[in-house]
Structure formats: C-alpha cells, structure tokens
Amino acid sequence: MAFDLDGTLYPNYLLNIRLLPFLCRHGPLLAAFAKTRGAIRREQQQSPEAVAPDFYEYQARLTASLLHAPPEQVKEKIDRLIYRGWEPHFLKIKLFPHARETLAGIRAAGLKMGLLSDFPPETKLKNLGISDCWDAVLCSERAGALKPALRPFQELALALHCPPEQILYVGNSRRYDVGGAKRAGMKTALFTGHFSRNRLFSGTTKADFTFQSYRQLRDFVL
Image (tube, rainbow, N blue to C red):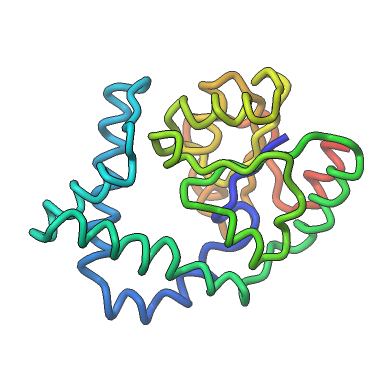
C-alpha cells in the first residue's frame, strides 16, 4: 500500500495560509517555478517514458529562463526557499482527522507501506510526526519525472518489492495520483475529503475506491 503526501495526508490549505508571506516576498520565483512544473508535465504528456537525468538542474534551467537569471542561482533559491524553506511549516500543520491512526492500523496489520511525493518528503514526514510509518519513501523528482509520469510509480513498486497490481495507491488528485498509479497497473483510492474539488468535478479517471474520511479507508483496507 502507498500514499501521496501533499493534500492527501494533510489539508493543502493549511500550508497555503502559512505561505502567504512567502508569496508576498517571492512571488516571481514561485510563479516561474509553478509555470516550469506545468511545462514539464506537458512535456511528459507528449513523451510519457522520458525522464530528466538531473531533474533539479533541468527544472532550474527552465525556471531561470523565465526569470532571466543564472541557473545556478535559481537552483540554490529553489532549494533554500521552497524545498527546505517550506519544511519548518509542517511542525505546526495537522494531519487529516484519523489519518495517523489509519496509518498505524494498516502498518500493524503487516502491510507494506510506501510513500511517493512530488516534493522531497523526508523532513516533512518527520515534522508531521509520521516518519516511522513507511517501508519506502520516494520523491518523484529523484526519479526524473513528476507524477503522473510512469517512472516514479515503477520505482515505488520496486522499492516495495511488490508487483504493481498488488499495490493500492492513495491520493487526492484524479490526474496525478489516480491517473499515474493506474497507468502503472496499481489499484487506486481517491481521497475526496469534505472540501475537495474532487467532490465537485467527477473527472474522467475513476478510482477503484473513493473515501471521504480516513476511517472509511481503514475499514476498507483492513
């Protein structure tokens, strides 16, 4: 079994509120960063098997071209201000209700547990207090591609030593989580929550299981 992190195990809005001062100070960097990641995902859609040998270098070059700044300087800023700079906020962010007990219950039942995130997750997991729940923790960028690309999900299956069809991947995005995991041959569970856009837009990618609370997921799995 495996999980996405951002927006799946904690509410995205809690981080977004804390990032308002960052947006005021570093708006151009964040806008260029977001635009770059959108462009990378469009490239991946055209070439689903393609990977970037050094994703962080490639991301920095594209972002730097938008900011008209040296790539080395932009890469350092992305790492310092976004990747590492956002991590301390997770000391004060709470998980979704019953998420922690669900993770503990599934792990206690003897199931392998994996996590695959688009952002480096290790420090965030530690700050959220759930770093001890996992048999494998992966970052899609280190695999050379962002979700829903195939490569990160393939590496997740290898890290868990499980065939993809025996993995249930849990996420909050139909496109990135459900779409990517299904393409890799995994079963999927979509978290809709109570205020998620997934409750308003059905989309075209259907999950094998949809749940609104973590107790529903726990009961389904166990």
